Amino acid sequence: MLATVGVTTALLAFVFWRVPVAEVRNAVLRAEGEGLAMAASLALVLNIFVSAYAFQQSNQAVGVALHFSRALRATVANLTLHNLLPAGSGNFGRAAIVHRHFGVALAPALLAVVLLLWLKLASLLLLTVLGSSLTPIEPSVRLAVIVLALGWLLLGGFARMLLPAIARRSSSRKLTHATDALNALPAGTARRAIPAAFGTLILIAGEVAVFYVVLRALGHDTSLGLVLLRVPLVLLAAKVPLTALGLGSREVASVALLGSLLSAHDAVAASLLMMAVSQLLPAAVGAAFAHWLMRTPTRTAG
Image 1 (tube, one colour):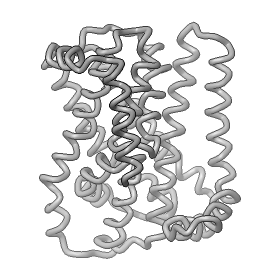
Image 2 (spheres, helix red, strand yellow; image 1 turned 30 degrees about the vertical axis):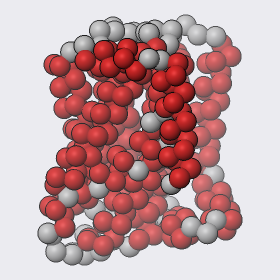
Image 3 (cartoon, helix red, strand yellow; image 1 turned 180 degrees about the vertical axis):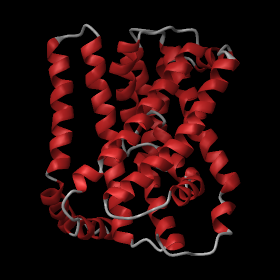
Image 4 (cartoon, helix red, strand yellow; image 1 turned 90 degrees about the vertical axis):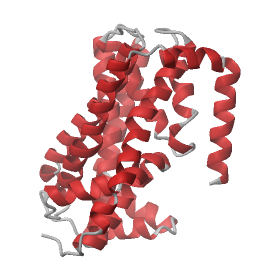
């Protein structure tokens, strides 16, 4: 925790040493309210309904018959943890919820979360590859993006060999449970994961769309190809498990990747507004409605 706070503080200090706070504040204040409202509405739909669908389908892929209403309730109850904890670790809260309240075995519940996290990163990389094909860039950059995406896909393909090895070297019981569930998966799991992959791709594409709407609210009409090429990498930087809320890492990535398209203070403003509409707002909604699940009696899976 102290390391996370330290890295976050250091990166933010670096950002605001290079970019005046007053300019960032002015950029945020001049953002179009209607555009921000559209971004916030889209972010809530993604964080609640699309995320619940992707979570349900990832459970279906590992053999858990989780009804959408239960996936939705677990998603809403976990919104605060999901959006405030670093590097997607808040996703594991949903596994704990469906295990405790709906009787789902812990091992497959954790494996469903691991699958969902892998699909999210794969979707970010695939959108970047799509953006590289729509935008004139250096061939070496395009090749690097393609190789990175293929490497991540291959990593998933070799998960049955790699995850047990990682679990043996780690003291994490979560990884051990997930490994046990992975070894117990029946044939045809990859085919059952297709709906989860589709739902996750829609979720990630929606996050990119939210960032695009935020850019429009700040007065920047950026081409779709450039958005697909650069914004997924900004979102990927925010998921690196080094900072709280992705603060600092997302702002540095925004300035580095979007600096040729807009001013540095607008890039930082867009990053902070993205955090507000796609993380802080859903987290507040989750805190307000968490009691919805807590008042529900424990049930068995089915």
